[in-house]
Amino acid sequence: QSADDHEAIAECHVTYGRKVLTVYLSKDFATAHGPDEQRQCLVHELIHAHTDGVAVVMKESLPQLVGNPSWNVIWQTMRREIELTTDALADVVAPMLPPFNPPR
Image 1 (cartoon, one colour):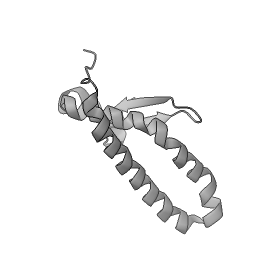
Image 2: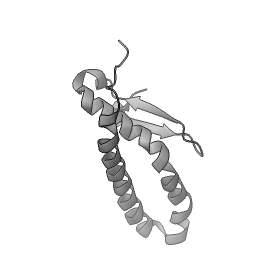
Image 3: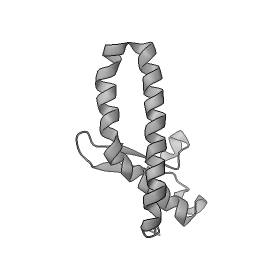
């Protein structure tokens, strides 16, 4: 499976209640993106293992508490902020790691 369905470079699925995830890469990940972008993208996805918990708790509890119109605004805001925070952390951490060497 790849991330191509959503036009993303990569995406991940975090196992509920664990810091275990599966990362899906776009079909052209190794050829269309340079080593620095690949590394930053992979680190971004790995950081989601640590940020997914708050999203799960919100999705499980808030819709019933606040109703759908409010929930939609809260979720879109939180989703955006989680992504921006994750990306900022990846920008700092990625340069400290070796480049990604995809299997050939």
